[in-house]
Image 1 (tube, rainbow, N blue to C red):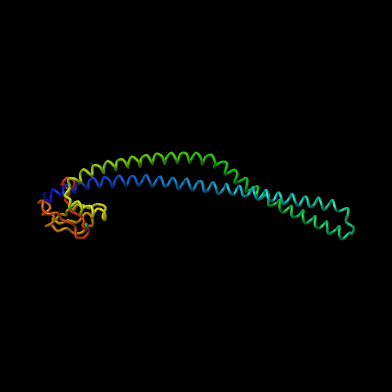
Image 2 (spheres, rainbow, N blue to C red; image 1 turned 60 degrees about the horizontal axis):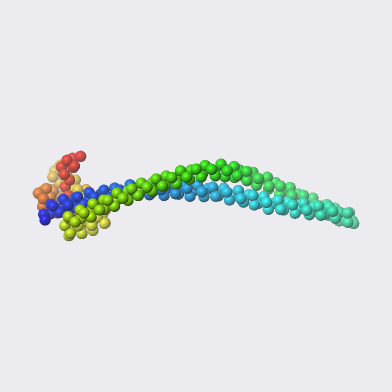
Length: 246
Ligand SMILES: [Zn+2]
């Protein structure tokens, strides 16, 4: 088989490989969008759970303070009940002092309660308003994920089709050159690179912009030996005239 025929087969193979890369790239886009939506859902629910636990905490604190107030009140009632048994004036004063202090404590607790109640109200309003809208948003986002997943699955079947086409094409490719092609493809993405022709007969490698001598281009046009770039190792080919002028 002539080198020019081998090269033509490799070009055909690369067209399929480029197609596969294109499909894979668009699939990556869908996957990235799905991941973005998932991250958004996670962020929303983290925010919601944060507020919710703040609300729970405010309620817990309030309940604990209620207990404190109740116990102080009970203590005050008990002391007042004992006041009849107090013998001296000093003892009575001391007891009265204690009761006053406990009343001050109760006042402090009540002030704390007011702050907590405000926190609780704000958190409660937010949680209530978000609960419904967040669920709705989440349903819509999960729906988007499903649609994007279906798009990605479509891409998968396109890739599978292209791979089948590729397997058929590989059968026609010279074994030795196919191995070289694969080796380069695995390290460079695409194994073939077009020569971009300049005006003076010379050109540059489309893969790495390395200079290509006019002699190489002349030989390729004559259908001579396959040439590879000494800089990037890609296999050179010439684009068809109408394609090159586009
Ligand atoms: Zn090159």
